[in-house]
Image (cartoon, rainbow, N blue to C red; front, side, top):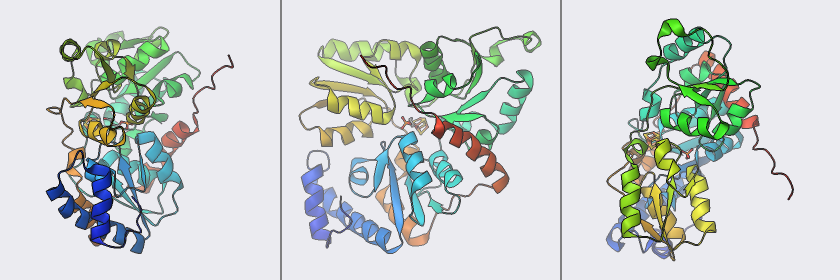
Length: 356
Ligand code: 13P
Ligand code: SF4
């Protein structure tokens, strides 16, 4: 939506055009007032709003200047000229923006927007792994805090994890902290996966070849989806196409039709022509896709939600711009080391497909 809407009435009319199938009219009027004020203040303060694909539809389709998955938003955060970045996402994403654009003011609308994966590992854990497996490169998922990134050789997201692993000229890698993403990437790269907590520490001599060392972090949303869920939905809707985020269990990804980052899933629905889709990921994304693909039916499993992403509301986004909060900062000594790992990731490009 353009930031040039001239009144709450025109904002409301425009929102109704886009959102009429997913947001009831009585709520639209109330939300239009917030949207109008956010977009007005955004211009006044020379701010840019970045919105992750999991934001609720009335926010996602109205206030972000840029929308996307973790990788796309990290690239935009690194290159924006705005003075203020308001990150409508979770803390590790805002921290990433701060690490890549240290001269900007980075705001996160809620101080409660964490992530179970980021909570699953500490910098001390990474140091202990490096001591146990000296010389083995450490690839860390961006869903971690800055001090963990600072201990790593490279970061990755769900859209480039296998390419980042392959970019190291080695056949052993430490991949942290998501157990299931690691399992999916190990499968894709032909590696065997081991978990240090399940291996006797005294037998750590020599990992052998083609080995990935994993960690037992899990996304509290994606770990809940099961193979039986997929079977049940397919029994009810035989024509359904099932898409899974790579944070889902490898055995779930195995029985799905497509797996990719949040943006890859959005593109897949746009470009394919099934009549029905089931997305094994945060439920709001189904609503956001439905808005842009009114001819395609999204089957919802909305009992599974990300409590952290859902902390970010239009009210908090307005408050964030009005009162300059919550300001995200990273100490320079940690920031500069974390920036090295993030920049190494940004330099990795997917391999160019061979000509047919
Ligand atoms: P994406 O990088 O695919 O957007 O995933 C972020 C995330 O937190 C998924 O749960
Ligand atoms: Fe973290 Fe999972 Fe929420 Fe993504 S969906 S922010 S991985 S808890």
